[in-house]
Image (cartoon, rainbow, N blue to C red; front, top):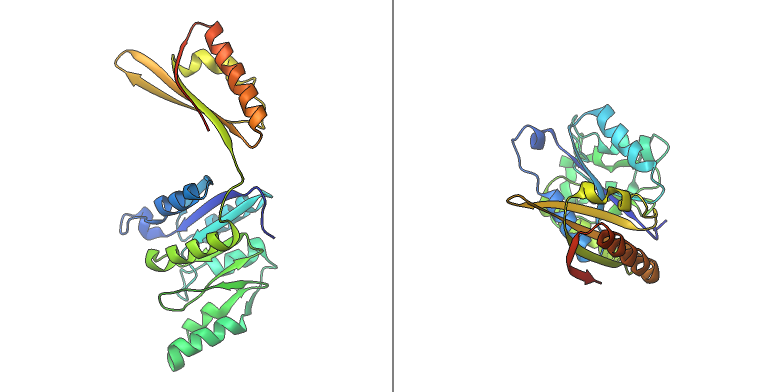
Length: 251
């Protein structure tokens, strides 16, 4: 079930990132790949290898009917690899079943060494489909064309994610925007901001230059005329309260 207007989430699983033993390489990567396709992340979570925390995070993301998840790490065969089990609980029927295709890949790759432990990676949530791993062939998996699970190793995970995006989410629908700088503080414009409808994406970024305060304003949406209307409204309201506007850009 490909999502037409996706909200992208990433979950980066690894105690070793949070305790400083390893640096995260996934956040910047997934952000860049999404932006190049006209998307952006709604949220990103970096979590410990903690059963309750991971499950709660997955369940939170599942509550968004437009969510698309990229989960990094925890799909191996060691006791701290919890992603397969918890993805089944959050996104399937709670049970892990032997995926015959994954079993054959692991046996072909490892032979007798596939047993007793590596073969555990072939037990996946019901209905899971595989994501090809170009490095060592140990597959990732996905559910419903929207929940994607890849290894924690960047050299494996990143090509897998690129392939998934190219297949299912290659380019965002057209989005229109206007942005401009205001010489003034955010607090001076809150009354204006509160009048914007939910259909308009809005962001404000405060800046300082010595004692002078500036705010970058951006409005965006899928309807060109609506974006134009509310951009003109915002500019007129700012002018009414005597703030200087410059560097107006429309896309």
